[in-house]
Structure formats: C-alpha cells, structure tokens
Image 1 (cartoon, helix red, strand yellow):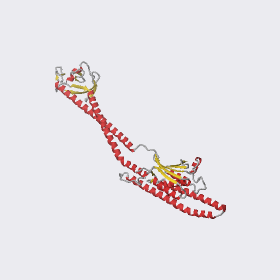
Image 2: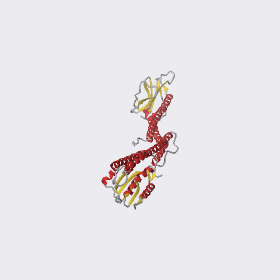
Image 3: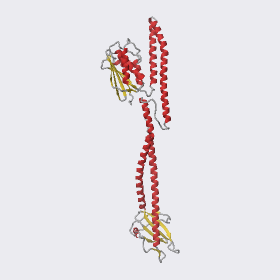
Image 4: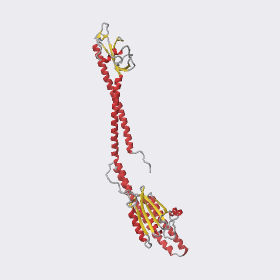
Length: 446
C-alpha cells in the first residue's frame, strides 16, 4: 500500500495561510504608505500655515527688503536647533532667519522646488521644507519665505501607525487562520465520514456505504457501492463455476475409479493411483480457485466461538467410535474478519485432524492480540517430528499413508489463512501431540 502524501487539510491550510499572509502584508504596506502620504500632506499644510503667518507679520523695510518686527508666536522657532526654522530670502540672499538657527546655516537646493522638499538641518538632521514666493506689496519684488520642520515627526507617526497596524493584522491573521482551519475541518468532514464508512465495510459492520453525503461526494459513494455489489457477484459467480466444475469432473472421475477398482492386477492398481492423483489435484486447484475468489470479499465477519463449538460437536459425533474428550477454552465474543464458509473450512480441517490423531483428548483454545485472533488446536496423539512439520504443510504430504485422506487439508487451511493475511504454524503441544496455531484478522465489535 503506498504511503499517504501530504493531507488535503494541510495543503489547504498552507495555501490559505500563505495567501492570507501575502494579502495582509501587501495591505499593511499599502496602508502604511497611504498614512505616510497623509502625514506628509498634513505636515505640508502646517508649513504652509506658518508661511502665511510669516507673510502676515512681515513689512517692507526702507531698504526694500522684508522686515519682521515681531517674530511668530510658535516658541519652537525661538529655541536653538529645535528642528523648526524659517528664512526670508530677498534678491537671492538671506535677509531674515529664525532664532532657532542661531549661528548655523542651511544649505538650500537651487533652484528651490515649488513643492515640499527635503534638506539637512544645522546638525545634519533630516528636515522637510516648503518655500513660497510672495510680494509684500504690488510693486515690491518677490520675497522667498521658507519654513522647515523635522522629518522625524512624520517618520515617528508613520512608524507608530505601522506598529499598531502590525499588531492589529497579527491578531486579525490569527483569527482568520483559525476560521480557515475551522472551515476546512468542517468542509472535509464528509470525507472523514466516508473513511469511517469504508472502515465499517472492511471490518464487517456494514455491507455498503450508507448515509447522506454532499452531492460532490455522492457520485463516488454510488460508484463504491456498485463496485462492492459487483465484487460480491463476481465472487459468487466464481464459487458457482468452481462448484459446477467440481461436479462435472467428480462424476466421470468417480466412474473411472470404480472401473479401476474392478480391474484386477497391476493395471487396476496403477489406474486407481492415477485416478486418485487426478482427484487430489482437481480438489486442490478448485480449492485454490475458491480461495482466490474469497480474497476479494468485503464486509463479511463470522463469530469464532460458535463456529468452533459447532464443528467440535459435529466432528465429535463422526468420531463417536472412539472415547475422546474435547474442550473449547479461551476468550468468547471474538469475530473473524472473513466469510463463515472459509472459517469453517479451516477449522474443520484442523479439528478433524486433531480428532483423527488424538488418543484421548482434543483441546481448542481461542485468543486474540494486536488485531488478530488465534486458534490453538491440540491433541495428545503422536504428533509430527519437528524436522517434518514444514513438509506436512506441502500439498499432498501425509505422515501415515495407512490413514485415509488426500494430504490436502493442512495445505488448504494454510492457503486460506494466508489469503486473509493470517498464518498457520505447527508445534509440539503440552498435551504431547501436535499443536496447530491458526492466526487470522479480527473484526471490530460494534
């Protein structure tokens, strides 16, 4: 079975998370940029208002230059190197300056831009400045009024906004991711129900996918149900064909064996031997054909203890000519994940062998561990030497040729067990005879 790749839920969550992070990042950068533009526009409006105040305070002096007898009321222009400065330029030369410049100079770009621009202050600090050409009278020449303020004020406001925006977006992102995970979990819940329904079929609790599913999944459930029904019909047809073939071959073969039995001498014995080998081979291959068909079955389970008890009782009656004691021990309430006919086939062969070889006692013990059931069939007979135990599981091998049988029982039981993913092993029983351990998959209990 191939290993599962990344889950759909993880893929959707990762894709949504990446898209959300990119969207929030782009939105955050755009909002921070828009806020900076808004802050610059507000700062420029403040600079323009201060220029208007300077122009209102200015008079034209006797020398034809601007004169401001009373400085602006803003105390920042009177504090040295405060970051707020103003200049008045007449005839290309500085004529007035704010006290905040003290004895320092500002290098101005030439020509002066008509829009707000950046420059460096007396101490190298970044400033944002605005210059306007104004006439104090209709006949006076143009005077340039320039006001500059600290760029850090805009940067600090932008950074403060960006910090709050980042925290807000982090909280928003966490909430949206939680909502996305909830949406994905809820959206994929029908697939989880589908998985559990399939598990019920495999465990034998159900024979088809029942329940209502979204219309996107309904075609899949319909196809699966049709596939299960088709599989069941195919298995049944295979069994029917195997049975029909068995009947078609057994009748002429039985007639051939009767003819061989009627022939005297070596010819009759040789013909009987060939007929018996043909019968054993046909039986073996028909059993394997039915086993191969049984492997495809789904949704079947069989109660273990009742099946074993009925087989012990039935086989015990057939062996009533010998005083044997048989017991069924171990755990009750176990279920085999497979068809009753196959379980009866395996247990019947093994229990019959135990009754055939036992001296006085047969014991069957039921157990389970790790999702598998185990059936121990023991007897107190002669057992099988350890060096020949593997050989006895081969087709047609028999320990004692004087005992009737084809030698196919153990190999058929082994083939069936392996078809279901189980195992069959031989060992020495504490009773003194053979111990056969049969392990099979366990069906879940409702």
